[in-house]
Length: 339
Image (cartoon, rainbow, N blue to C red):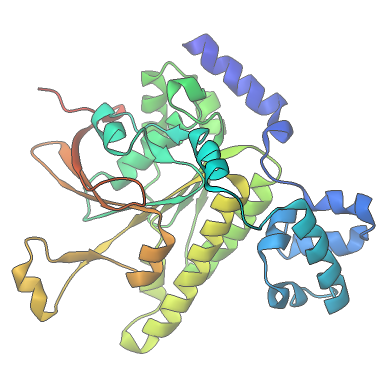
């Protein structure tokens, strides 16, 4: 196993560019576009042709030095290179058959998820404190670097830490469990400490630049909503908070679409205070409202079980039925409970 993992690490380093699922915006220089204009777009956060195709004309016109005429030409060329029209359901079915899923470390949890965490979409983990959200993220940060036939995605991990929960010691312990070189695994995890909601958005833009140059399989945001709660207080700022949060979630959706990565976000919960709460067994709901709910493809609720066990429930998924799985938190990451 160690030899196979070492080979994957070498492949990631030597063939990163060949494995990228996106097209660099600088390739448009060969199609008659000025290098200076392309650099201006890169400085504004547009690093791939896909990012140009997904952007609105209003967003591109806001880039200093890029006129409406240039935007029109850019979009026309981007649409040619990035098919965005209709396709058949059979073609989509074939693409999903080749979709990579990242295992969690627990067979029971993988079975619940139909194989693991889905790439190319957003998975939300919500729950109270000490329910295993950050611990699951640590396991995923390691497993995503494994070969595909071993449950990984053969790519690096990027982690935006808003709550100071990232611990490299957990990464080392999990890497040793899978026979991986801890130093190599740590090198393949890019970590950024985040301090406010504006910084959080800027880091997501910087993530696009890094992903356009290297092969990443997973982006973790732990947590996605905490700083927005802190920066926008009270009902008077609720509308502004939701707008800012929606902008951030839209950026995460773009990253998942452009680079085919798995995006995993953690979310806090809040007690419900409406009249219907007294009739519910668990009167807690995830923060972010419909903004986060609609942006997340899969929503997983975590709660405490007996001892060190935790229970994961599927609350929302376009392809998974509702169900639950029990897993345990060990010193080497997420695992199945011991009988």
